[in-house]
Image 1: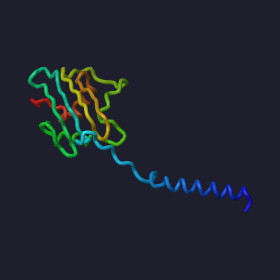
Image 2 (image 1 turned 180 degrees about the horizontal axis):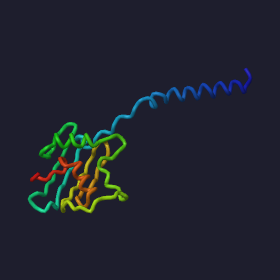
Image 3 (image 1 turned 90 degrees about the vertical axis):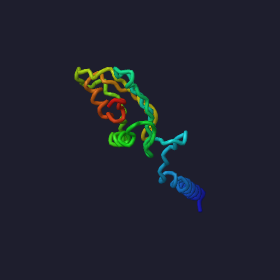
Image 4 (image 1 turned 180 degrees about the vertical axis):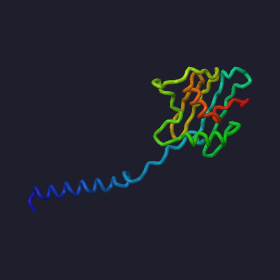
Length: 149
């Protein structure tokens, strides 16, 4: 067998062996990351303030999958979050700066949601300063509830 032919066969066999050893890694999906603290990966801290009544300020912990935490309507809040969650879309995304919003004012209430949802970190701020922000708040009405509501 000529030298050039042997080199070509050796290169082809080596390349095939390399691809064969990598094939299981390509064909196997990667597992979802596990929570570092051992708790539910879907865990949020919800803080509602500036409601106009200091007694209505609230801080809740909400865990989903499994449901738990200090949120008074945890099961309904998890259901609302699940219904807002779609692959490839951030359910907590802020209103686009280019959005055309009505000039209505929904009150001074603000909320902050932090934690992890669907494997992603969450750090979202909510208010009721215009029609778009009110609609965004209302999409999370159960999650952002105030004690009096």
